[in-house]
Amino acid sequence: MAANLTPVEEAIDHLLGKAPAITENELLPLTESLGRVLAQDYQVPADVPPADNSAVDGYALHAEDYIPGQALSVSARIPAGSAPSPLKPGSAARIFTGSEVPAGANTVIMQERIEVTEGGILINTEVKADQNIRRRGQDLAQGSLALKKGTKIRSQEMGLLASMGVAEVAVVKKLRVAILSTGDELVDPGNPLGPGQIYNTNRFTLLGLLAEAGCDVVLCETLRDTRSVTRETLERAAAQADLIITSGGVSVGEEDHVRAVLEESGELSLWRMASKPGKPLAFGSIKGTPVLGLPGNPAAVLVTFLIVGMPYIRTCQGQLQIHPVGQRVPATFTVTSPSVRREFVRARTESINGDTRVSAYPNQSSGVLSSACWADGLAVIPEHATIAEGDLLTYYPFTELLS
Image (cartoon, rainbow, N blue to C red; front, side, top):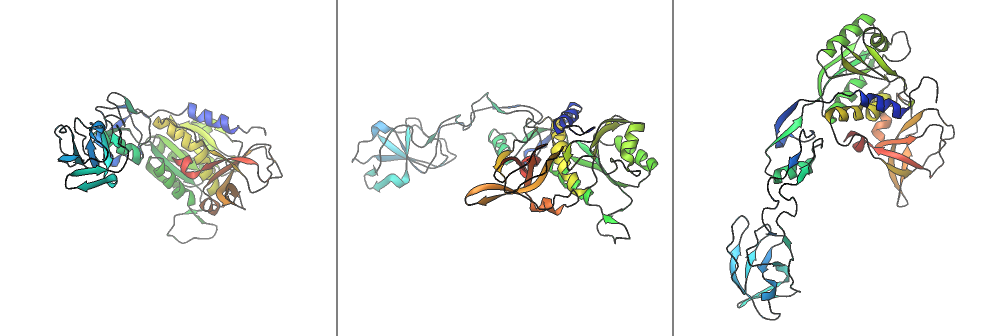
């Protein structure tokens, strides 16, 4: 490994070891809980479903009451939402999907298999017990654990909580994050560019990433390239935020003041990671508030946030799933010059002759953000590795990196 570069796993472990858990919770309406993290376990208060019910529109009966070729009388009609009386012996009941199965019935025959006659119903299929019945508690049994603390709520978890009658959900409070962009050259979109100026790309990339990560942005400013302004703004941000994220100012240039301020007025516990892009990553604190210093190049900001920032935020939130799993996919490209750094390539999967392959964007410069719009994930090229076409690479979809 190149001198003074921290391996990726060590860098992530370092950050996670210093990630403070959010201890504050809040109660939200279920309708507002999407994307939040459960602050407690949820036990099942009652069986789901609460009673045996029909999985189809059809007829409920006792299987042993039916004699092939003989009509069976219909003694009741059971719409959904009604409490049925016990089934009259030797008869059937008209029943609908979701309706409670009456006592005395042990099977439901779907209506497509029924012929209705003046004398009753004839069944055009085999009749046996337990057909088309959703049994009480088959989804959730009373007293069992439905969802664990640390679960990130998706639409399916919202539905499951609703099935248990939960109207308000205890969730972890949102992480409060300050975004600080560094550089005299930065101009906000909507304003004209002067000589030597560029638009502030990183602010908006980070705003989107933090929204998807379930965080609140409490401060969002652009820093001038002076040591005193950098120090004053970092200290002000520390009083408002749980985490400060900077972009730029952590490399080795004379105008890179973030790293210097952390060394002088706070703590710098990690600097430079063996990744490409993302080498000038910094981590430390000021006034006790963690500071994650990302590189200044737009694609590097995106990649380093996904690789180290998201696991850090998930750990603070107490999520159960911290690291992405990824998948192994054959490459369509080659790498002939190995690097001492692990490379995270903007890539996407494609179907080639019916097989899934991963392709890389041609220009992997850390300043080319359009590569990430073309891509749908990151492919990993290990340290010191060459890649031949068809070699298996670990691939992380953006959806998984952000989930």
